Picture: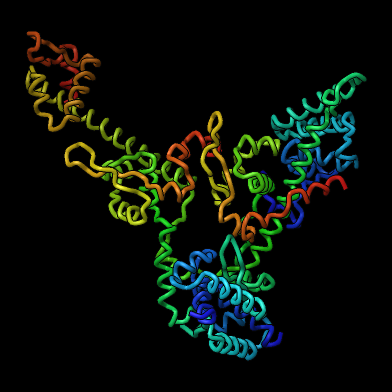
Length: 177
Length: 177
Length: 265
């Protein structure tokens, strides 16, 4: 293989590698190719990436190569990563949300009773993401806050109203199999 | 910002995004930039990536953009990742998925009618693999659950949206010819 | 259900049972029919007949033969196959009926029409499934970047309605398991209460029920004492005596049990 033929392969390998990929590792995969050619290809690839002025660069780290975003763009990357969690929920938050969805309106002590673990930070997350809302106080000792799902919850799960929440019967056939 | 200034930022954002990133998401992060400029930048970026003949390409999937390795290089990537192709779907699951994809939203009894066989275990597999999602109840007697395809479905099958599914009528003549 | 991965050619998704050499192979191939429509399509192709003009008698005969073979080879024949057999026989008899020359167009309708429609639909979805399969294979050749530290900070799950439901079910199942453990614990305490009462009756002849209940630290303990007393009455180990209505109840040991309990202590 020529150096030019090696470059795209090496680019793909650096891209998918979880750890910086070393020349030795590259040589092992590109069996039969000369170490010099591989090194030349990696160096050309780095130079091209870095002179292109794109959003990515090839960096030499911990004895290997890796593709990273350009440091100057970190603000945007951070902005993106910050915007991300809204789509995703931890298992604790998901469990809490499921309990609230099916048992609403419900208080924090009642959720604790069902889940067996405290859910305060999960509740905070869910409130932050507007998936649940406070629904007033329960008229019992301590007047704990009642929680229920929000309109955003319905939108997120594509429901018209709460009666569309699946129940045990809906999935009965599926669960037994 | 000019389109040329937007390009590296967008490249970095597509790179860090775990899922295909949509124009809408990009616009949210690049607050204040015109949607037209963002679109132009993405399109130029894709064209550049894809004409460069490198190991990577920008692809349009599930309504967003994602960088992947070039399919021709899969042999090397597999060798490096020692990855097995993910478990294939059974014929029953694939056929059930096809029915759901073209007839969504659809209920289990309706799928049975079309396929002539029960599909519950196939549906369970498809739900587990998140290729389909429940879409509420059908407002008929028994309120059966409706199913449709997910975003994961589009990604798994390399589709940008459902309109990219091949035309069902094209398969009609396979038999009769 | 058969996994497509067991097939050698990734592009080939058709069930194609041929006349196989060994019965085992035959068995495997027969069980590849997804359903009655699959089997019918296979027969139509094998007989090289038109799907729009199915020689129903011939195909029915073959279809029944396959069902028999499946039964002989001990492949469970699903109910759907039998329903289709009935449909085929019904169509066959309708075809044999002489046509009424005065019948309207509607009555003249080909009895095979609905079946043909179903077969065509099924065929289309099989074709679509095939294309999906090929697309998935192509797609699997393109790899995305490795996960980054930022992703790991976020070891979380994106959610679907089914997942929400499954999670809820898991929580409820888990709770049920905990409740069962608690019930088991309660039973132990009741055994303890029985032993306590027995011990008290060994040291003093009479025990006041009121004093017994007054010792209870909680409602639950009170219930347990009450249940323990009932249990001892049932086992004929104690006798209850009430001297006045609304008065205190006295618990005494039954004579016959006395010597026995003395041994135990």
